[in-house]
Length: 135
Image 1 (cartoon, rainbow, N blue to C red):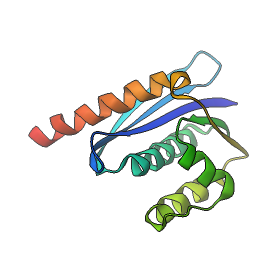
Image 2 (image 1 turned 135 degrees about the vertical axis):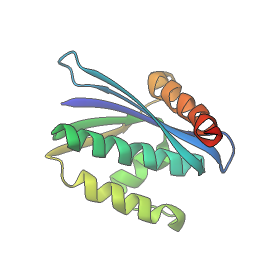
Image 3 (image 1 turned 60 degrees about the vertical axis):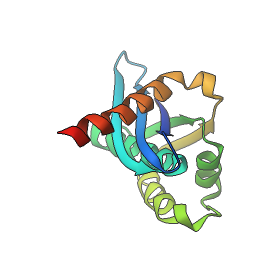
């Protein structure tokens, strides 16, 4: 079972955003991903962090995932396969299509203090937006 910690962060709502993904395959392989996302809301960034993590895991050929997020909105949307705010409907649909390709998939909400590595990566990704804009 691959352990995946995700976080989306935004400096404003909307504002420069980033996704942070920390993966532990429990065989000694660790992955640290920072993805600048442009201008999004925090909730949009959370969905994008999950989608990027799912794509990455699929590319690696991993088919059993245990995802941790500190976003209650994201965790509840995935568990219920429903999101009240239609603004996130397409992101949820994309995530569910990817999730359904995995043999096993679990998602769990964790307090922010248990998701620090993913949070640090997401905040780094926010700063990468500025670097990419200046090129």
